[in-house]
Image (cartoon, rainbow, N blue to C red; front, side):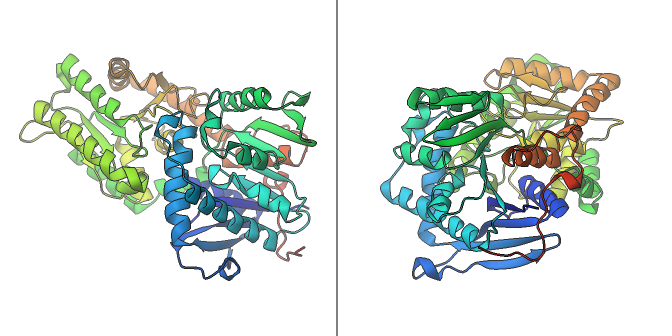
Length: 474
């Protein structure tokens, strides 16, 4: 059978997304290619070191970036250029010729690792806009393997994609893929409407077309979390200890707020929400806490410090106005908690406020729901612009730009009776089980392999392609 080569930005960080990939590959086997999280000087391109390792049921190949690739290609071109465009803020984008060259060098390094490890029957699954240029270099090396890419970010609306100076190069690379996957129907439609405005397409089916002599498929594949990973977090001692500490030291009405420290997070609006809530409802005086998670590692290196200081100042102002000697409405937490400790924070929070102004996947919302106690669950408040909003039936959906509406939602959530909270949580949990990480991988890979849809929404391991332990290279 064909095997899987999964290619992602980074596997060195312990994160929900890393657990998603690990769960998929641990079940079905395969090869995981990624950056190792480090940078080192490489005398010339051919001298870059690639490290192979066996990780249980799958193999890994990792490599370092050069300092220029890390600074110019990753921190600058991706974070300061591509990120704003994909989050509907091209006015903030900053591009440079040197950044683009280093971005291409990163993608060449990935392509080399793929070409050196691919077998003729492997399918290649690229993850996110870090690897938008990789397919071009794979095809230039002569590989004819099936290649799919999944975009974790929203696809920009209108002609915003063309604000990237090198948009034609990116488009050519995208069209070297056999399948392009998106998080939401809106993202797929944005891509198709834009593509049809620029290129002559021959529509073959609803989600396939011919362009430049190649047949391309598109599809919607919402990312699911690994529920085995959730169970491990929930059963850890660190989770239990953190949950106990929170319940003993915090007010009963604790509201969790987190996410990336970036311009699309909507965090200032959440602080304003708490101010509105305290002004409207005297019952929350000394009886509510917003747990604002803000570790510097949660943001882009160039912006996290500035945004963090601004957010800290806003929290300090609110605490100064409404706080007392022994109570503050906002706990601004910059400590880098482990995933197990975060799980304890999630479990102890009565409400999760996940309200980005624009987001691709919103995995925090899914982790919050999965970690709740079904007998006494918390309530999820989710932005209408979050990538997971279409999936999360049972969440309270809000406009993240409207603190008044969000304050009303928080008040409703905190006053919600137990039977209603249980009902909403059960609906949310059902969706997480039906569309977990294995469902995500299975649906994407079946489409990439042009296989019929499985009759069950939950995929057994045998449905997914496996990688043999003996890999015959090209």
